[in-house]
Length: 222
Image (tube, rainbow, N blue to C red; front, side, top):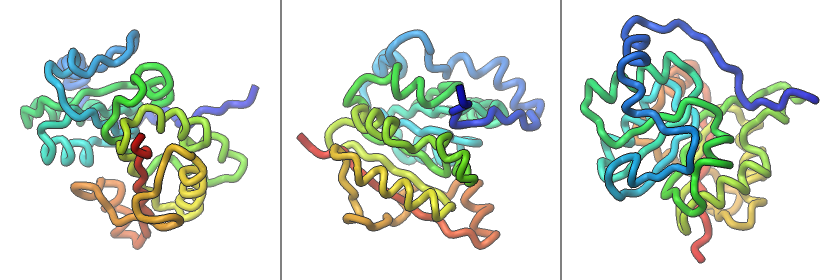
């Protein structure tokens, strides 16, 4: 059976501070893997539930959480240095409205999230798998889009960004083909950036002259 993983578990170099955060701090922020997410129990309060898939080193998620203290934010990542960096930053900044899921985003979306529970989902710079033979590994594909759309509350937003033009147009076609979603920028149009600040990945790309394509969709209101 062909390998259809949407990610590669990058090892990366873990600093002493990140390793210490993984050992001592991560557990207090961890999202359980054995039950449907109970946001009120997880955060100890009600609030808009926000999901970021693939938060990297956590900068965009931290910016969002600081700017939206009333939101309950869950970040999904498999990159351990990034997970350690985020856990460390949450402790240092005394940020209480972020939780971390370490693992595959597909499990979170398909199994752990309740339907109509998300006010916003953010997917910034997913792996483009640029080689055509690897396109089947891309996260944004029809089945995943349909499932993620079900997890959005009516009018809940789905925001994406990529610096690969081919992937940008492929995502546009897939999202506009999902009948429960509407393009907030207008049919066929890319959106203005809505992030609270550039990710480190995006900032590096900007220095190299990379263009970025943003997409903003929402679940149709019932």
